[in-house]
Image (cartoon, rainbow, N blue to C red):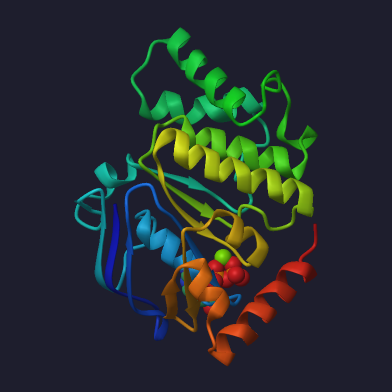
Length: 245
Ligand SMILES: Nc1ncnc2c1ncn2[C@@H]1O[C@H](COP(=O)(O)OP(=O)(O)OP(=O)(O)O)[C@@H](O)[C@H]1O
Ligand SMILES: [Mg+2]
């Protein structure tokens, strides 16, 4: 469903991603871990066509994201780290915004879709609230609802649990897994948080200084004898703990 081949991304003379190969099968949840500044968000942005790779290719559902960005993007939903909500719009309008722009639906059908996705993410009856009135976990849920409303085949999550308390993080992880099963969406989840990754991922890819240094099952990851991976996991975890709520 997602195929990244030989992807290189440079900013000026700085190479942030160095020849990344990554395949994600239909229905799979792949977690991308790695140290801060390791290039995780950059990789996610290249996958969804927000950034153009310097070299290599990205295919999503068989569509070349570089040649055909608009068509590819219609198959993808992105849940941004900050949730990226419009602060001046209530929850329902935040969800309706994408529906109005991208789906050709009658008004009552648009409202129905917004209602359904908000209910699905556990925000039944919260449509009139403004983003400032929401908890961190609720904001993430709105971000997920907004992406889900467009019926994506692939969902890309950037740090969905960072800054959340452990219990809220747990509920968001469960939502990611449930949504994946229920809607048959393929998911790529960027995360620092090891316990969260173990809860959601079928596979873990670990990025370090622009290289993919591990790609395998959570069991293999837990067993990885590589001292550098162990040290990096420890550091990534420490970064999470140090992040402000
Ligand atoms: N648009 C840009 N222009 C120039 N440099 C960039 C740009 N976007 C990212 N970078 C650089 O690329 C590197 C990787 O950034 P990226 O945001 O992908 O890391 P990350 O793994 O997501 O880190 P974090 O865990 O802190 O979110 C960083 O050094 C960053 O400064
Ligand atoms: Mg990032």
